[in-house]
Image (cartoon, rainbow, N blue to C red; front, side):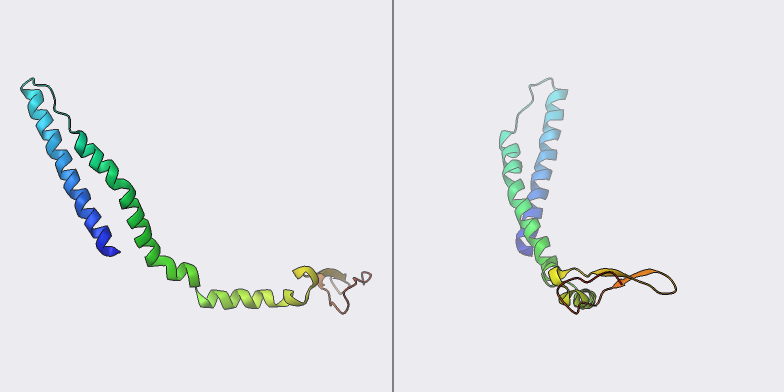
Length: 121
């Protein structure tokens, strides 16, 4: 894949060099008060190259980061897994909270001894 990206960079450089040469030719023609030459094939080649350049650059950049996107950081995965483990026993995947009287009234996770919610304690 990198080979294709390098080849397209060489083609882009050659087309840019040709564009600069065409501009120099047009400046010379302008100095002599001649009609300026049009270079439609150069523009057509530059436009034809663009989709391929975008495709190969995107594919190459994806190949560089795909491992990270697809598998991610295993440390982060296990950290998230530990955070989500308390929710696995909860019906509907949501933790229920009840007011629990203490020295300070606070919200604490409810004990889910039955599927039917009980009165607030």
